[in-house]
Amino acid sequence: MTSPHFHAVIWIDHREARVFHFNPHEADKLVLHADNPNRHIHHHRAIGSGHDPEDQHFLRQAMEAIADAGVVLIVGPGQTKHVFEKFVAEHDPALKAKIAAVETADHPTDNQIVAHARKYFKAEDRTTPQTK
Image 1 (cartoon, rainbow, N blue to C red):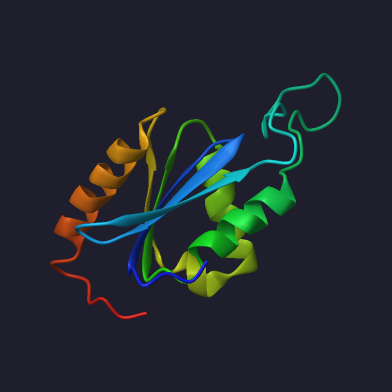
Image 2: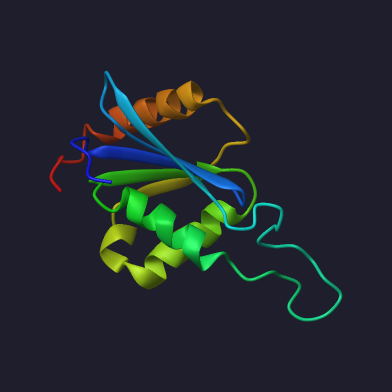
């Protein structure tokens, strides 16, 4: 996704990722769905490590959706947001450097996600140059 917007926010859980590239007045939205949305990434089992493996395809799609952003905020419930941050760090260290923060957000509306990110970056932008 090529976007003219510098900022991006991604809300991610084990079922979907909602990606917004935005500026103060508009936002572009992309929704991605996991291949197996009923499977939790960290679903406990009696045998093995206690964790299902990550959905690599889903995480890669999410990573590609934010790749052209200048700075990214990751939000979401549970552990998937941290799994995603680790995936980005392992597969694209340059993109990992663009992640401003990882925050917990239960199940906000799209408007709430974008409003939160705008507020976050309004304060952050005072000290961060906007260059890709």
